[in-house]
Length: 262
Picture 1 (cartoon, rainbow, N blue to C red):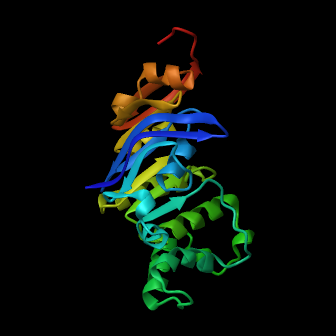
Picture 2 (cartoon, one colour):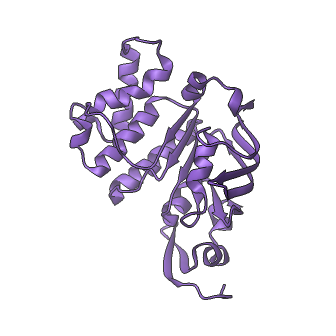
Picture 3 (cartoon, rainbow, N blue to C red):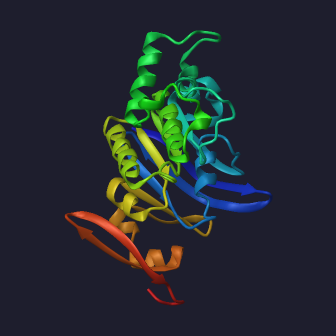
């Protein structure tokens, strides 16, 4: 089942074209990584896919319905967006912050139900954040805040999760835990799109990669198809060692690529 689809998408910011002619789709049960160099439009694409930025051209549908025609509360039930950064503008407890993820499922002024509380507890456990549920959010470290913000997104119980650099700032152990959790969620039917800079994590955990470069999709498909020496040299300007250890892929940048070198 196609959860999210964009056709012939073009986006401009401050009269500058960021993306042009983008075709994108997300299937149920799929974990997709958006990769590409800084400034290639990964965050712009994510924001456009969830309706936070307008497209100058193209069509976006969620569950087969034009995105613009879906009521905002209904869209908030099916699609969760996890932006970059871990800031909270209120000094509230972790549990209260994660409970905000349940708002799309509640009537105005409704107090959280036992079901809401259980979902929040499960989300905190999934992100290894339950142990500080009673602490103020502004007393947490950057990595702890990142896990709490992810828990808030998971508390929505969305069909679609768009996550912008969710492992940035996390230690290696928690990076693996987040990616493993994403795999579990996608295996259960959720569709997940994540912006990620760690190419090894992308290759190891994601079903499909979309490589953005020069306003367009340079390559997409399974990791082995996208992460080639030619594509890495062109898009990231690097030479890299691509291999496997114990059956798991890894990508190690070894040097800056030289012009005309593949």
